[in-house]
Amino acid sequence: MTALHLRGVVLPEGEERDLWIVNGRIRAEAVPGAETIVDGGYLVPGLVDAHCHIGLAVEDLDGAAQQAEQDRDAGTLLIRDCGSPLDTSPLQERLDLPRIVRAGRHIARPKRYIRGIAEEVDPHDLPRIVAEQAAAGDGWVKLVGDYIDRDLGELAPLWPDDILAEAMKVAHEAGARVTAHVFGPDALAGLIDAGIDCIEHGTGLTDDTIAAMVEHGTALVPTLINIETFPGIAAAGAGKFPRYADQMLDLHARVRPTVRYAIEAGIPVYAGTDAGGGIAHGRIVDEIIALHEAGMTTEQALGAASWTARGWLGWSGIQESSAADIVAYAEDPRVDLNALRHPTRMILRGRVLH
View 1 (cartoon, rainbow, N blue to C red):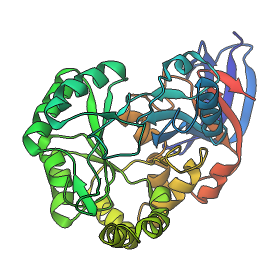
View 2 (view 1 turned 180 degrees about the vertical axis):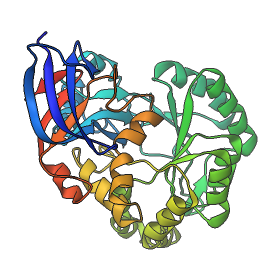
View 3 (view 1 turned 60 degrees about the vertical axis):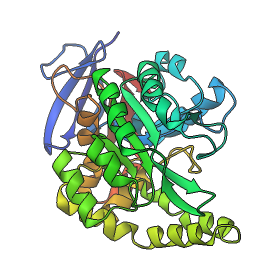
C-alpha cells in the first residue's frame, strides 16, 4: 500500500503538522515517496455518531449498508449502534463503511416498546437476557428504561430497581457497558443508582438526577434532533393518551435548558442523532450544532462527536500509531460548525474514501 502524506492544522491541539499514513496507522516521521493527499486546512479525528441504528427500519444487510454509507458520507467514521433487530456484524468487515460498535437488540418488557424491535422479556428474565445481549454485541447493552404504559396512559419505568442492579452486575462482569432509552423522570434514579453507564435522551433529568449522574460518572447522549419530533408524537397520541401527550410536550419544551444544566454540571455529553429511529441518517452535523446551541462551545460540541467521543468508545484521535480515521476540511470548524458539512477528504482505516 502506498504511504500517504497530509499537512494541516490537527484538532484538538490546533497545531499545523505533517502526518504520514502507512498500513492504516498514523506516523509522525516522514516516509519517503509518500503521496500528498491533503495540503492545508484542518484535520479532525473521524466523526462519531454515539446513538445510531444501523439495520433499523430496513429489511436486510443491503439496506443497512446504505444507512451506514449515508452516515459515512457526512463524515461519521465511527458509530455506536444503539440497538437493531438485524445482526449487522458482517458490515464490520467492509473497509468502506464506518466502524460499528454494536449493542445487539433493545431489551424491553412485552408490549412496552415499538413492536418488532426489542427482545421482549419479563422482568425476572432481564439479567439472563442482558448476558445474552452482552455476548451478542461489542461491549454495549441497550435497555428500554421507560416507555408509555397504556394502562396508565403515561410514561412509566419498565424495571424494578433490584432487577436493574442485578442486570448491571451481570453486564459489567461480562465486560459490557449498559445504556438505556429514557424520556421521563421516573426511571432515571433507579437506572443511575444501579450503575448504568449511559443515558440516552435524558429529557426528564432533574437537579437530583443530574447530581447523581455526576457522582456515578454516567454519560449522556441527548439526541437533540430526535427530541424535535416530540410535538408530532404528542399530537399523534393526544386523543387516546392525553397525559402522555402533555408529558412529551413538557419534555420537549425544557430539553435545551436541561441539557445545558447537564453540561454545566460536568456530565460527559456525546453527540448522537438516533438515526434510524425516525431520524434520517447522515445528520451528525445537525446534532453537533444543536449541542452548541444547548450550551457547549464549538470546540466542545465538535469534540463530543470526534476526539472525546472516540476516547469514550476506546478509539484514539490523531496521534502516533493511532488508526488513521481522519476527515479534512478547508475551513476551521471551531469558527463555524457548518464547515463540517463540506469535508474535502476522508480517510478511513488508512484508505482514501471517494
